[in-house]
Amino acid sequence: MSKPEFVYTTYIHTTPERVWQGLTDPAFTQRCWNGLVFESDWKPGSTVTVRYPEHDVTIADAAQVVLESDPCKRLSYTWHTFTPEWATVSGFSDELLARFSAERRSKVTFDIEDLGETVKLTVVHDDFEPGSAVLEAVTNGWPRFLAELKTLLETNLPESDAHQAA
Image 1 (cartoon, rainbow, N blue to C red):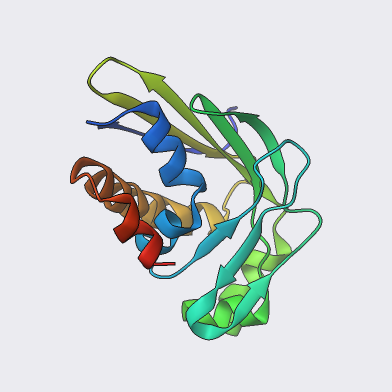
Image 2: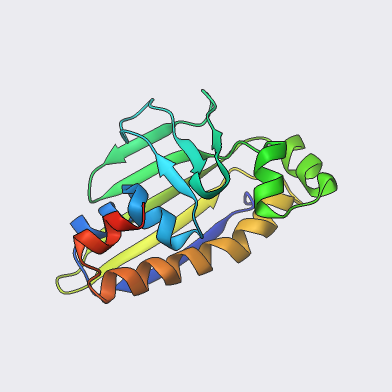
């Protein structure tokens, strides 16, 4: 029996460097995730802090860490610390927060493959238990995030515009 997981592949007309920037630069994550900012130095073992600047909410957890980091090729980190502040900002009920919090931490991996004029980006989010509420949520969340990321990268958002969003 295979482990429950979410896998999504998209092709983006850009460079691996820009995809990496899109996954790791807070200005990009903020634009793609409705204000959510991921902050880290993106080195293995480093923490990944989640911040909602608009709501003055920061979620830092020593267990939310970078697992793998090969710039412009592969990035993997543990997912995600669920707190009451996160639930309030995200509009989730106390019941759903309790379900999410009861689950073990999952992981997300981004594989970036240079195909010349395009980049193949594959997202694998796994390490879920059967019947996972988090798996159900990310199945709806990742396609939206990746569509926003693809749009930003393909419309060649100028660096200055991206940094103004932070």
